[in-house]
Each structure stands twice: as C-alpha cells, then as structure tokens.
Length: 114
Image (tube, rainbow, N blue to C red; front, side, top):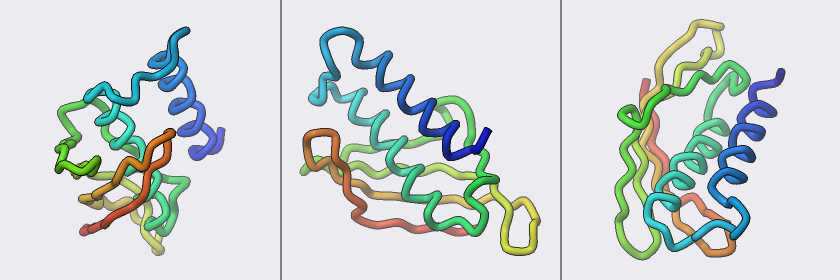
C-alpha cells in the first residue's frame, strides 16, 4: 500500500475515532495538538526527496508539540526516509503551524536538518 494512502487512511481513522458521533471538539487542547502533529508531518513530507519511504516514530514521547498562542503550535520530531542517493537518513524537524478554523491549518515555518 502506498505510504501516502496509508497515512491518509490512518489520519482518517484517527479523525473518525476522535469525532465519534458528536463531531470533533476543535477547542479541545489535546485534539488540536494531535492535529498539529499530523499536519506537521504532511508539510515535512513535501520537503523529503523520497516521501514514500518516510517512517515516522511511534509513541507520543517522540513528538513535542507546544502551543505558542494565537492558534500556533510548534512541533518537533524526526522522520527516517531515503535521500536522493537511496540511503536511509534521519531528518530532525521543527514545524510551526497555525490553526485557521474549520479543520484548516497553514504552515508558518519549517526547519529540517539531517
């Protein structure tokens, strides 16, 4: 299965579980942090040479998500993916995203380093 499709499927399942029958509580701080983390991954994927090879760390201890105020969140973590030579490398990243409302997020900044 394509990793992008798998990521979208996992995100969809996550949202469905979080939504339940009453819909997501967009004001819930943990829900916002979880969505900030998932959104940051999408922005990082766009920076990778081989996004289909991306392997994300498991477990919440591997992600830092800090609310900065003004609906902005700073997410820090890493991803393992192939570079342009096919070598698997670890890339650390810091992404700042802003919640725009209605489930929409925008990129404020992104920094990556191998």
